[in-house]
Length: 313
Image (cartoon, rainbow, N blue to C red; front, side, top):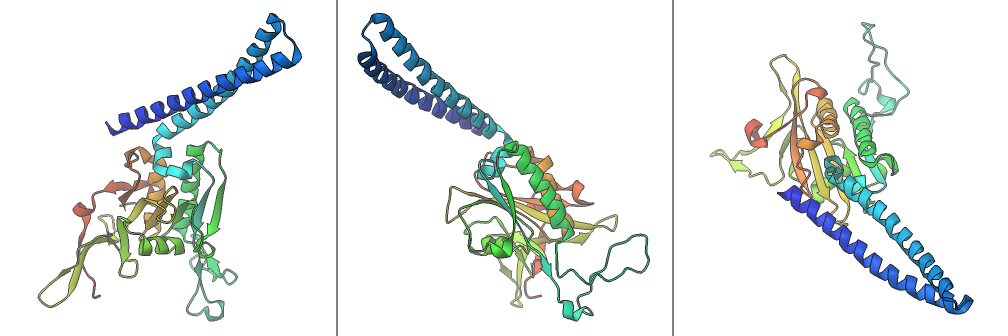
């Protein structure tokens, strides 16, 4: 029912604009045709030729506008475009965040090359700023989602979130829980659906009720990474669609997990299962569970998988 109302509203708005443009165009065409007729010649055939030329020019403009509006309406009916909001309508930005290690203290900030053919892995010395595996995979899926939605009609810019803290009024996607822009949004926006607690080790609802026991300990319901039946970690992540609270006409998407599989899985789900997201809503928050690698990502009900956590830990 909501989808039908959305489509009828789009069609009604389109035809209202079409009729307005047509009536205005005809009036202008008559005026221009009359001026040209009185200026150039006064025979009847010339008069009608001038009016015909005016009509052709006016209707050409109307039909060009018709084609553009029809294309935009069809694109907005696409569930993926509706999930992404203004990210699918205009130039957009993807914000990522790097990890930094101290090169002058390699004893406590070692970084090893991941070479499965070697038992002893060499230490990587040169890289000070590194990106998480999950963020890198998520970036690929997010980029594909935007390209699929816009058909390559818009420009996508990837920026380091550290450099973009003071920039708003943009259509953006933030990748990663430790992303500086993600943390800024979750800390300052009113309703973000979910937030991270205990040093980003659990996900709780944004308006979570904190409960206290007789000993004065505080507890909250949340989800964390845990060992599954096959000994692999069960990871969790969120997909948030929010409005920029400083510029409400802009969409902000947040894709953030507790671990690499969570973040990558949420992005994978966005690209491949967008029809299962609440695309009819202007804003939403969805919890994603990743039980066995990021391609196993699935949407879950927070209240069915959450448990109590001690906030004093």
